[in-house]
Structure formats: C-alpha cells, structure tokens
Length: 407
Ligand code: SAH
Image 1 (tube, rainbow, N blue to C red):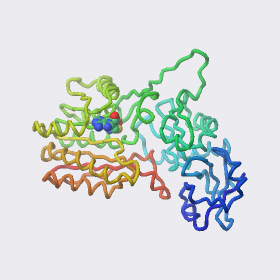
Image 2: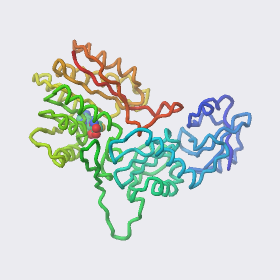
Image 3: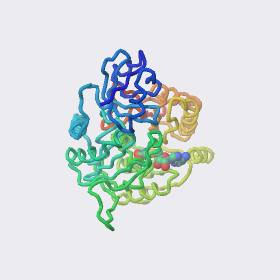
Image 4: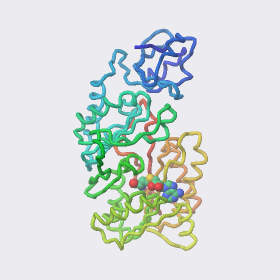
C-alpha cells in the first residue's frame, strides 16, 4: 500500500475522524513525486501526518478536490471483500436499533456508515445502489456481493447517474448489476413496497434519487397523525413528487388534497398511489405547475387551506448558495402563511446542506412575520434514522423540517 503525507497541521480533521482529505492538504514536496504520479483512481492508500504518524486507510481520487476518502481509521485495516461485508453488517445493525415501519429503507448512507460514495436503498427484495466515489467504483463487485449476502436481496439495480460522479472522473452508469441479465432478457424496474401500511410502486430506473424519498418516512406518518388530530379538511401538498404526503393526508382523513409538482411523471405515479390504496380518487387533485407561481395565484384568488406541505428540492447545494436559497425559502413560506387558515398546519422543509436547523427556523420566523402571522412549533424534524449522520461528519445532516400550527 502506498502512503501519502499531509501538510503540517492538516492531520487535525482526520484526528477528529472526519473522512475527507482535500487536495490542498497534500503537499507535493512532502511526497515522492513518483508515488503521487503512480496512483490510480480508486487505489487504496495509507495517510500519514507530516511527522509520519499513520492516520487512516483511504481511497485515492486523482481528479476530485476531495483527493482521498477514508475507508478506515484503523491504520492496519485491510480493504477487501470482508471489509465491505463487515461495513454493511454494521450499517444494518444501526438500522435495527429503532423500528422501521416499511420494507423499503436506506441500508447504507455513504460517509455516515463508513462507506464514502456508497448509497444503498432497499425496496422489498430489490436493492438500488448508487456509487459516487472513485474508491467505491473500484470495489463495486465486492460491494454488490456484500449487499446480496448481508441484506439478502434478490436483485441489485445500479443508479450511478448522479452528476457528482463527474467530479470523481467517473462516467454515469445505470442498469441491473445483479444477477446479470442474459442476452435479450429484460426485467421490470417497477418495485412495490409498503410504508406505514400504505402501498407504493416505484420505478427504480427513472424515479428521482433511487426512486423514492425514503428520508421523509417518519414525517409522512407524523403528518397523517396531525391531519387526523386537527381534523384538517383541505390540504395542499407542494412539491408532492409521487404523493407521499398526499397519501398521509388522505389516510389521516382529509376531505380533499391538492398535489402540486413540476414533474408530470411524478404526478402520474401519485395518482396511481391514490388508486392502489383504495382512496376515493375524487378526494385528490394533481396539478403540474411551478409551486411559487401557484401559491401566488391562490393568494390572489383568496383560496385557503387547513394544512400545507412545502418540501422543495435543494435550493442551496452548499453554504455558498445559502443567501439566495434563504430568500427562496422565505418567499414560498410567506405566501403559504397567507393562504393557511388560522389553526392550520404548515409542514415545511429544507434539504439544503448549506442551511442548518437554526438558520431555517429564522427564515421561517421572518416569513411568518412578513405575512403578519405567528405560529407555534409542534415539532422539529429531520431525516429518518436510516439516514444517519455521525458526530464526526456534520455534512451528513441535510434534511430539516418544522411542523407549525398557525395562531
Ligand atoms: N415530498 C416528496 C419529495 C419532494 S422532492 C415525497 O415525500 O416524496 C421535490 C419535488 O419538487 C420533486 O418531485 C420535483 O419534481 C419538484 N419540483 C422541483 N421544482 C419545482 C417547482 N418549481 N415547482 C413544482 N415542483 C417542483
């Protein structure tokens, strides 16, 4: 195994067990030029401090700003098939600490599970894997074998089509990874599962992310309870995707739910979900539109709701975009407060890593005051526990939400 030395002082984040080694932490003069030039994408390397103290075993990525990602802080660790089996077993043990009311869950959540660049979502007997780092790409076969042996799934579909692969010098790829298809054989990419007793079908080949927003599972259940307890009748689900919160509202007894999304395909799936769960389809309406525009239209027309969900896409991919994103969050929330009846519920989210819980709450507070309203916080929420984030890797925390009751 080749060794890379860091610049003086650059060992500090690794000593705190943060798993990223930036290009700027590696000084060419500290290292043998031949070693640096001989390293290939995904090679396993040892990381040392400037003084020669071994720090971690990592994978090398020649093009990314994150030049290496830690596989293990045990400096004697051997990265092999057994390593990936153990890592997936440990991830599964973490999921078992709390109940998961579904046969669909996130089994591996990248860095937070010690597997940088590896996402594994399980839908019934199908796993969907997303590989986004050079190291994970190198070990893809071992990862696939570990998924089959540890998670007991029958099939694996690969969804390595995320744009972040470019940063690692990797081409996009998607298709069945296991078992391999024989010539001319095809296999449906539609999988079904149940969450909190509600039925879903997702297309793992064309759906967003790996097909479904598993991170909102407990929040969908909480919303169903809140709708039931508050007796909310008219519900607006903004950025509905395939209708997760729509089904929550219907199962909580809402009389009418309007779902808005800019993806016609997502809305088709949402309508199908209402149908396969046996809800009266006249209780649900689906609108293919831009959320900020439709919110303004409702305000102008004086249309009011008893409950509103705002679950927008990531407005701030990093802290650098936080200011513009903050304005966008404030705008949609302000109009939502205007069209929410007194005593109504607002379930509002941000999945931007660049905006933390405290800032998000400030944004929502100013949206509310600009709408001349006030609200009580009923719950602070985040991603379900199968999307863990470790203490050492705060970047892993991205989803935050507030369940509010307008005064
Ligand atoms: N709440 C959903 C997940 C929402 S993901 C669930 O529980 O499954 C965000 C959604 O916003 C995506 O479906 C995307 O198609 C949609 N979207 C993005 N920009 C939009 C816009 N300007 N107007 C309406 N929908 C938008």
